[in-house]
Length: 177
Image (cartoon, rainbow, N blue to C red; front, side, top):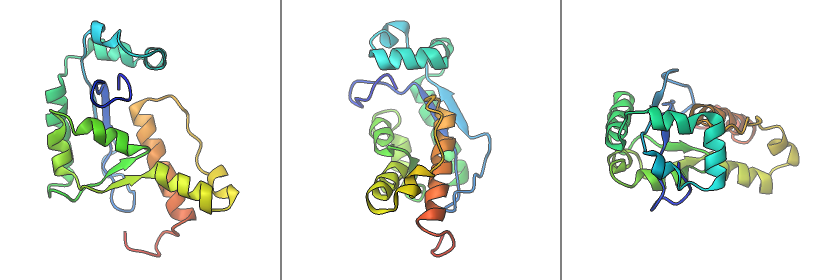
């Protein structure tokens, strides 16, 4: 994203990996799109975004991309419905995923959120609950993050973290998948 304000900032990159309710990855490739924005739009990013996205190569990828926001939204929805054709069944999941949903609610991505369930699985919320209500070791032993802020890495790290908390806090197999 060009920043954290869903009303004025833009989605730069999308990565989606579909899992089962037990966090088994259904497609190792996932869906990936880098959305084109002109240089003058990227020049309005704050210092953190400018530095981070330049370092990761995302800024160059955005400038080189020919994918429009509409194409990215349509292709993302097509990808999701390939695995979860029923409306209001697939959960949006990840770390601080409420922020992702806020961006996805805007056109042209609103068709994606219309397909998703209204509930979220926010891994950060689980971590914050664990930090407050579990022994210290629970959060300390959670998988570490690379902090590269690359979409695919972020998603795979979120899945690994969700699996960890499922095993440690929720004792996998004790409930329904």
